[in-house]
Image (cartoon, helix red, strand yellow):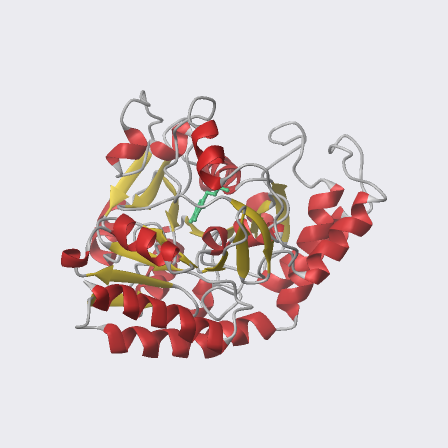
Length: 407
Ligand SMILES: *Cc1c(COP(=O)(O)O)cnc(C)c1O
């Protein structure tokens, strides 16, 4: 990695943001200028191990050579057509993505929230045209503590008051049930229900993993009641948990699958709704779209991501290194760690609040060269690039141990 050459300091750049940048984030005080693989470097040339990986948008690390090469090649040829015309990259990307996920059809979009919005529209249309729900009566059942994005409709069914307050009036048509509770779900689903929309593992909530059998139960229930099961795998999917999809841990195939984040290889925003033909087939020309969705640059990068996942290497790494992560965290339980939830290379770690808030722990880790993100209270989230080595991972766990023993 080349040394950063900057005339402005981190402190200077951070204070320059304050008057001109909307304050909708509270970033850690690190200003990144370069990155490669698992490591980022700030403007002063300090190096940090990236244990967040862009909330899983960087599953393959920063600037993975195969992804950068695919992007460069495409940049030199064709970048955007809009869907008014065909482009020569989209068909193969859609075909290979459908094949990778075991479904039939792809609706390409850009951001995760757009994929969620698109799935809501498709589910409603499916409910009216296929299921026969009376006009404007369709409902969608979601889980408490969900995170599906930031649009007005999506925050309408959030249970996070910070995400909702001040943004009403809200979109009707959603029912919220407790996560990991099949009886509550059964009670909420009725003849108006178009779909059940869930994260197979709740990421923002703190990597909350449902009981074994829950996803199988949701699949059985939705099939029996005649509604769709939409799995939001925008964060859990594409290798993170040791499988291509988190639903594979229970051999469940949803009716609609939402992908994003890592699908863009850390380079461009790429998201997709992937579904069976009888579901996505309800959309006809003009009824939905996106100017940038399915652009050739996105398709080229997305295709390179699919090719990396087809090798199985990253799923295998997540499984094997997941054992290192789990073992390392187990040793910290009772030594500053109250408990943790982990699957593959993904963990929510509850720190004893006597050591500080999640934010304070994150700042201490940052000063020791490890970047993480806090979620609620004293919980931090670990989601390193799937390219991380065993030594790097053990190093990060060692830093966590150090931060938790110093006080
Ligand atoms: C990040 C995320 C989204 C939203 O994706 P954006 O690209 O930020 O709009 C939706 N669902 C889940 C599960 C996510 O983690």
